[in-house]
Amino acid sequence: VYPNPFTNVFHLHCSVPENSSEVTVEIFNVLGSSVYKRNETSQHGEFSAEINTSDLPPGSYLLKISAGNALTCRKIVKQ
Image (cartoon, rainbow, N blue to C red; front, side, top):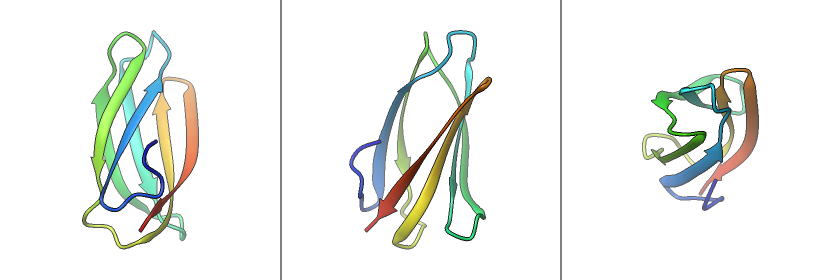
């Protein structure tokens, strides 16, 4: 995830299991509510996306990326 902190847009690049083609990107606010969700397709075990959060207020969020049985979470900060 870069940049972090970000203003409206951040970039996401990660490796995903080869046998998983569907990737779900979800952002949660500090109250645990989902405020953004996007389903994408990965190519050859790699996933890249540009995430536009212009409709979200500044603050701390939790980014959840899932692909098959793999799951990772990162704290992100919008300025």
